[in-house]
Length: 367
Image (tube, rainbow, N blue to C red; front, side, top):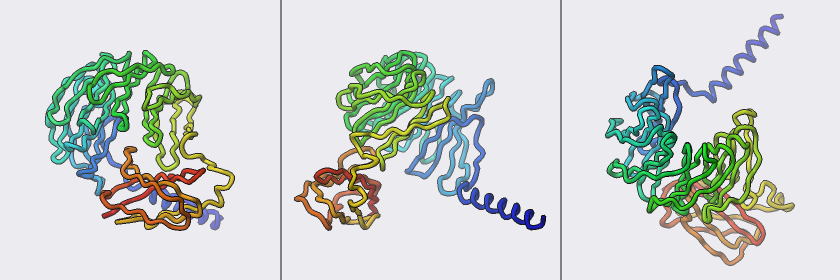
């Protein structure tokens, strides 16, 4: 009996220790936290507290990224639902669903700069770094408000489909995609002119979008038809429709394996989509014999490719999928040094092509 009690105590202690290793702390915020965004300039996390009927919290909690302490609580509009960060001007935008406006917060001081009137039931935000614009999808007025990130003024309002609820930006072609939940389509907006380029028919109840910069594709989760529409970012054509679980409602993209993860709300599952034109899960029957190593990593002024395959080209992309450097090579194996001159500190992805294989490697540059 004593041994059983001792065993139980040890197991409890082990579980407690294991959980403690993962969970650093819990931070009290407002009622009904609904959205989060990170400010890398000042190392802060913003939490939109939507609240609950009839007492909507209408606040944003600001958390210190270093200490996890709450810095302050900011009063915003009624029913804050979405957040986006503007790195160009160090601002945070908060879409307030029930007061039909967007609160603009100064990233350095946490002060409210202004409040911008938008359409009815603003539900989603996305940032366009190419033109320093913020797009706000208004789900009840069936339009998208375009905000100037420098002046915080409304540039224009764009009519889209019925019930716009999700946005994503394509930096490769400078386009904004808007999922329209009730009209079962996606509106494509030109990032330069704000004109509607086209409308793409998708599945039933589109509710989430994600962009894949490796292959320039947009994935659209169709909540009621239990599938995902894959759209070509260059042509806006539908490439394919993929059956997933019940009630797909959220995405994330894995840049290392080039896979897209879909959360299925009603089937309590996550579907994993592998891009068949990108990284293959089993690249070839000879994968186990292929060697490709990148070092040093992190790198400062150069990195070395060590391989037993005949490498033909190396391309370096940033995390947004922008091509930073391309180097065509005379075929080699063994080792090759690649210069990082002119490349800033950050996280990058290498696409290394051989005659019959493509490798993707993550590279960290520190200068």
